[in-house]
Image 1 (cartoon, helix red, strand yellow):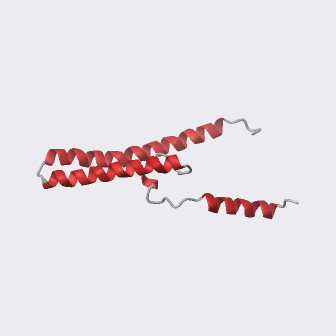
Image 2 (spheres, rainbow, N blue to C red; image 1 turned 90 degrees about the horizontal axis):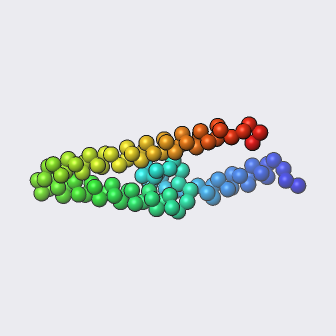
Image 3 (tube, helix red, strand yellow; image 1 turned 60 degrees about the vertical axis):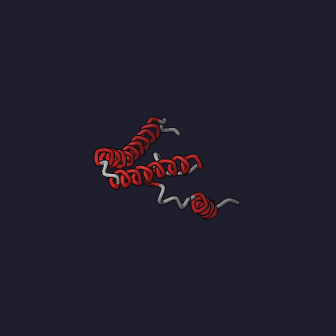
Length: 105
């Protein structure tokens, strides 16, 4: 017989198994929760683009191209900001969908 305590235990085990250790990549994910490999891949690509921008900025500063360096710094700041905005939009859309469901569900 399935009891409430068994269901709670199964849910706890499922949550522990499904929890991923991608804390460093969470800042570069367009979604608030990385659940699939695709989400991890997208976050990894954004992280690599960010690292490329930072390295290019340092190289431009070393070569005394200050305008190019300023543009790269601007893009480096813009990338995480846009990702944060997209996370908030995704959560708002999800919340709106949840509120639009009938109460019987």
